[in-house]
Length: 378
Image (cartoon, rainbow, N blue to C red; front, side):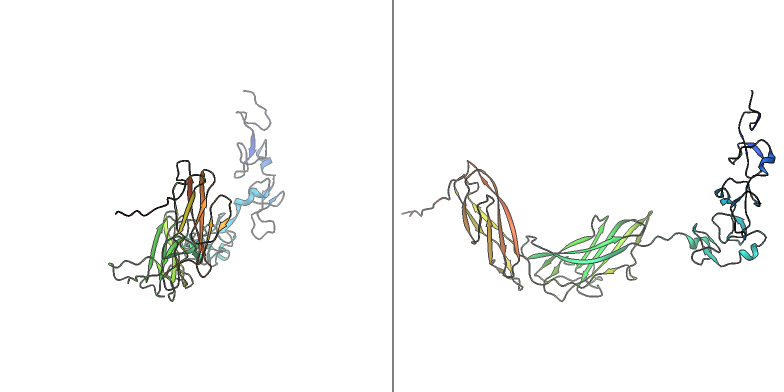
């Protein structure tokens, strides 16, 4: 085999200076081509004197370390104090040092460094071993606790309240659980509402409000079941939230106020439920040009919980013919179709809710409302 006699070995491989041996060999770990070892002893070398202003720089003259082409080649020549207060070549040790002065350089308080090691001269917290320097996973947080009232839920004698909060975690660990407790006692000894939700999609709970009194259950009575709702016009309710995360397979609860819980402001559900709009219509179906009769069945409330007739009504028949504001009414649909008819009922405080029904008008429908005539059986 014929090879280039300059810069190649007998196997025709290029020869380069080797950093560690400072010899000219095939596969040398520098990028410096060579012919003889002499070239490798005259090239730039790293300055490995920690007290030098050019420490770990690649110098053409004056360096006493390994061969180099650029400063980056000198990085792994750093000597640092290890946990045994020895000066060793270590990129992730503590204080910079020299072997000759290690007793002085490494006689410093042990602190955590960026690699999680407890070493003299580390730049983190004081420590006694590497275990103290292991990365800590911050617990999850529940924040921005808030309450707002839902409107027009359409259930007789009831309202609803949203209890909401935001889940937060520095490491973005997944939320696995939350717990919500609501109690009219500040010590949460007999909660009216207890909720536990696994793998929640949203951090909120819709809690029903009723005009009837709640049932409180002492935590020491396993046979008692909390009511699960809150009542109108009480002295108010205390509420709190606890959240949990899955941190790399480890479940971790929130710290909160030291007991794991985050506390919302006391909440009072004042007033009364919103109107519940209801209506019937006849005939069903009706025919084009026939008359459809609409009858209001809506319910409104006062603070005592009594059912009241609603104060104001608005009908929209869904055919762009205008609105009617009487309690009961009738309407003629001219053409076939399914018409979305809306009744809006308002209570005496001005709260209004709406209900929609589809009114079918077909050729098979009744033309007019039947006119009944009483016939004597005699």
